[in-house]
Structure formats: C-alpha cells, structure tokens
Image (cartoon, rainbow, N blue to C red; front, side, top):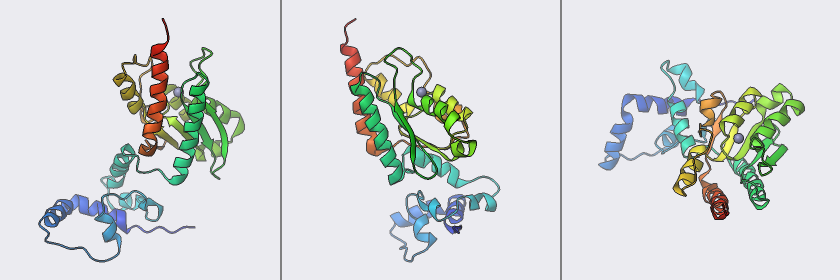
Length: 247
Ligand SMILES: [Zn+2]
C-alpha cells in the first residue's frame, strides 16, 4: 500500500486562509524575502499543486478543516487549464484524434473515443458514424452501450473514457446511467461551441452542457491545450466542407 503524506495540501490551505498568500506576494515584490530549503514549503510557494496529489493526500484538508477544501476549488481551476492530464492521458487522447481524423476522412464528423480499463488496456474504441442519418451514433454512446454487455459494474466504475470532444448531454447521460468512471476530453463543449460560432456555423440543436451538469458524480479532466490546434483544425475542415456544399 502506498503511504501518502499530508503536509503540502494542509499547509497550502492554511496559507490561503490566513492571508499569507497576499503577504508573501507583497514581500516578494519588495524583494524582502528569500526562500531556501526543501520541503512542502517549496511546493506551496509554486504556482500550482497539480501532480502533488500523487504523493500527498488532498483529502487531509477535509480532515483538518471543516469548512471545505481549497484543493477542490484549486483542482477545478487546474481542469479549466488542462493541467491535470498525464502523458498516458495524452497518448490515449492522441489515439482519439486519430479516430476523429479517420471519421472526417470517411465523410463523418471528427469525434473519436476509447474505453481504457483499470489495467490500462484499451478495450473498445469508436468514432462518429452519423453520416448514414442516425444522429445518435456518437462513439461515447456506443461505449456506454458496449460496456453494458462486456464489463462488470466494478470494471465500468474503474474504466476511463477518453474522447476527442467532451461528451454531449446524451452521451454524458448514457455514461452516468452505466456507472462508468473518469472522462478525459481533448476539447470541451464550450470550446467547440465557441469555435463553431466564430466560423458562423448554426447552433447545435442540443444545448452544449458540460458533463458535470448532466452527470455530476463523474470525475472529468480536460481540455488538453497540447492538442487544441489539431482538433480545432479537424472541426474547421468539417465546417469548410459543409459550407461549400451546394444547397
Ligand atoms: Zn454525444
């Protein structure tokens, strides 16, 4: 069993609460203090704690402070900047983008998704297949339905679904109903909506709600700034094809 330390997150919470953050910032601007040493102190003076949760337990804050966790607010902020993705996450997301590209090249929409089990094995992958007229054939929906007959409830809960674009409300609901685990997306629904409206595309017939609004218990990570240009380009190509189509 891995033992985790607790100091960094509790110390970080204490600093944020006590006003020490502002005091330190002022003193640093005045060049009045120098930090030397190696401990949780060096971590809490950094811009970010993401990654430290691998060796230090953020839940320790909840045990120490009753009013709620600084970490949980912090983590949400990290997620909006895509700072909680590992190299493994990015490798799986790159595969999602390959599937998305394959979809686009086959005349479909550029979305691709994978289901990875707790051992790290890719168990199922798919891409959009709506060009035949069935607009519900999203890969995340296929994954949820596949999981019903191929995985136990425990396997579903410990699986991660990777996807090039954040789940739409239909797929978020299917994911939530099936009790699947973490979702990692490369681009958020908010990003896709913003790009599309910037290109003058008509609005989606379905509200672009985030996964958290539909299935609030599902842990979600993304977007991946490293992949933003590539995925944006795929969607721009789709838009260009549609707008040049006659009639
Ligand atoms: Zn969907």
